[in-house]
Image 1 (cartoon, rainbow, N blue to C red):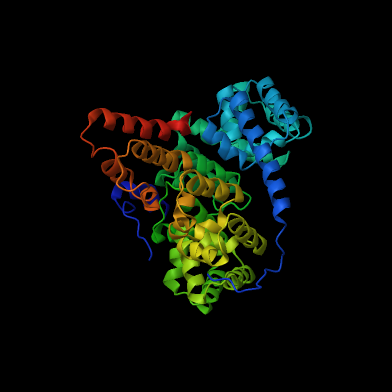
Image 2 (cartoon, helix red, strand yellow):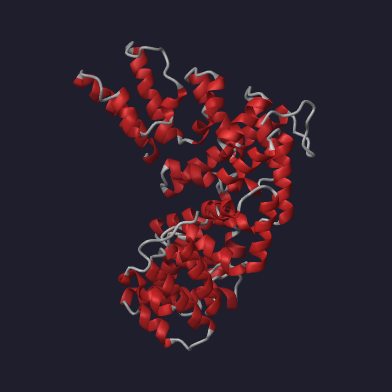
Length: 460
């Protein structure tokens, strides 16, 4: 098995992966009551204030791009500079460069709200006590920041040693020699050899390290690892993606009996076996949900007004929604109704774009306000094209709308406002229809400049 996997790419064995194949009732209320609109607005304002501060802090203190800072602000919210400043000061005292610190915070932004003296300093001192030079310490921690989340002692020591061995082997091109030098059957030896197999398959280093420090390690053992890896490869997962690692984790720790039981649950709800595996390909971790959770979400969506076959369709399109709590779905309904959508329209949007269930209230409000209030598209246009709520404002919505507004100001559109589907077409189709078709080269250059400049806001 090992020789097949290690040399499979050269033999062409693994070059072709195989791929598997709402009107809401009057008076309906979910078990958890909705919070009042005023309380929701206050919470939204407070949350936005914290996010704005977080974004500003990350830009000013670490020089991160605005888009990246906004992404991080959705994972951690800073209330002031005191704690994050102490974390940055501690890291700099250990000679981490600004680039390394930025990499650490991008990977694990929660470190900014960790107590620098009580939690972080003892771990850095412990790692340093193992004889690592300052440069070795900063390289390993910045490569795998998650190591700072591990307990002191044997646990953090074990991960540190594994990562150090791999980094050194990579540098000296002695990776295979390292795996051969460890005792056959030893825990450390199995880990290194299994990581070596995954490395040969093309699994990125950042994902390999996440496997090494994961609490549920699919790189332990030998026979079970081989069996799990073979299954994931045969399912057609791409080794260069995070879904490959997710699938490996699920298959490794889930018995065939448990998987069969989960499939039977879905079959009773109206799914075909092929549907279940197609959902697994979209979102491997969906297989972790218990029977109780699966049925609970199914019934919650039915209470929202979806028919059974419509819930099945929603699950198939967006299996991530299975993990949504009853309260989260209730909050989602409240958000849309607060923006002027009816409950029937909410159900219709869920059927067409199930991902809207997982959008934050801030995102839904921001994008709906822009489309409806600033661009003047009717609210029922959003109901017909709810996928616009999933598009990037910076990369797609704003650049296209600015081009549309420029054309409207010059009286160059036959209708005052094109249909909202203008946001759904490909970039090439949009440019061909609204920019390149003009004979006036100066106008075309102006429109292209608007489109490109706005599209690049994300990098500023």
